[in-house]
Image 1: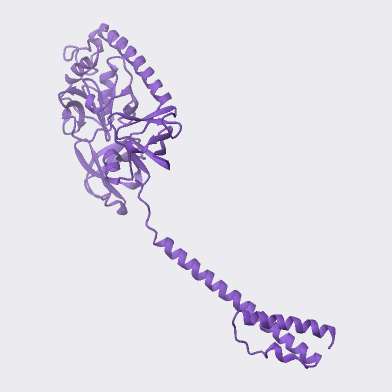
Image 2: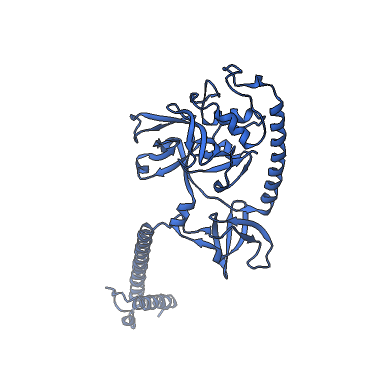
Length: 393
């Protein structure tokens, strides 16, 4: 037998072995039957075997390809059926009397880097022993697991506020979820409205709470977010305390200066005899001055205490009489002065709501420029969810 034929016979035998190994039945003659054949016959069988092997290789490749496709299809199907995890799954809510310390490592010997106050929220990254690694606001570290509740959607919703932030110059709040519906009110860009119902979000509308009524706004002109109270880092706490002290001193000085000003500061558009000039100092003086304008009109975008002001314009002008500059924006007023807990409100505090703001008079009441129907009037302080309470004095 020629050497070349022997080589080809070896290839053919190898091919036959592969055919047997993959358990395929072939129409080609068994390789064992080539003994005694001529070199020409051997070459023919070898060639046929090579052709068969090639066919088997292609078949195996096709089967593997089909299996891969089926697997991919199965994975895709499984991915389609995956239930999306709740946005509250990794949220930890502090449940303590006052606050829980955030430490730089998982242990009581860790340095305190911040405070997570009761009902404040944090994002959980990992568990380490009986500690959670968390981030809340600008503070990251570890808290003891026993002081927080994780993944409780009902609790997380109860301590958070769903907001719709206005992204257009003037947003119309409508009576129904359609542009053909009556306009109940207008809200300026940047203001936040409390969302009370998202069941119609798939139609492009959400229901919001605003001042003394509820209405619908288009999702085209707002951005939705969930607001939590977050931790205060050690540095933020020190800065806040220093700022509060400085503002107390500045407010006292401004009030003293206001009491020395002549009554010519009386609101524009009214005779000096109609309204008393601001006098005295502190929150009670602010309330006394503000309340004399009850009954005057509400004007959207206005800031006149006599001829018309909107909610933030009213508060801004009242405090301006005491030498305190405030922004003409209800959302902007959530950052003035320093924050206090609603349970600790006192006369003169600025109470911030969804798209609204007023001045606390005491006894559960605010004085505010409510709307075009009511004008400047008194309103129950809890008429709507309170977003913030800010103190100047």
